[in-house]
Image (tube, rainbow, N blue to C red; front, side):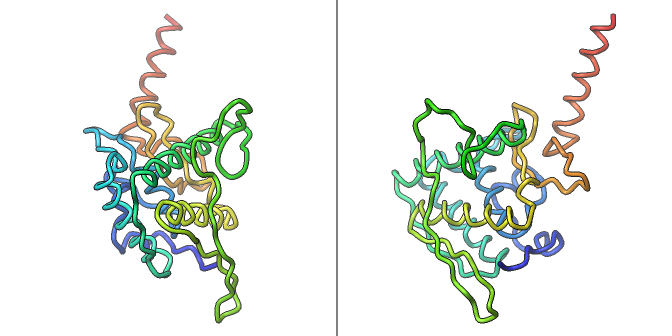
Length: 219
């Protein structure tokens, strides 16, 4: 598995398009792709558009994201072509991925790498993807995503999550605790205690509301 680039290396290279809209730093290495997919949602003030809302904007995002993934990982950029069915699958996958991260932050059990257990719930999108193991000239084993279209993009995301899990940094990818926000951020605090994508934008107002509520209870 290639080393995860440090923060300085990420900042010097081109920004992840979706994440950059919210004024936050990207996650290191290939994990930046996972964060960027999560941040294609409509969020922020003023509200940013959902980059997976239509095929044109989704295709543009996928091209930029795979190019950025290539820069971050040092691997060739794959060619991803989306169609209407692939776009729907990608949206469903994004929802399941977000749901899994939110469940982990709430301390709920997970099924597999992504989603909390809900026995009565039918699958809403892809939860598996193809990949191959390959040994390089240095003797290191790499996990290479496989497939085409949305399946290839989903494979890239799952491979990045797997590598982040091995490096024990997956737990640092979080979604903002503000229910009106939901922006995905990479927690760089020493004790992994971050809760807000931005303390100024979401943390301080929430803390102020909580303080006022406690004051009213005392009165």
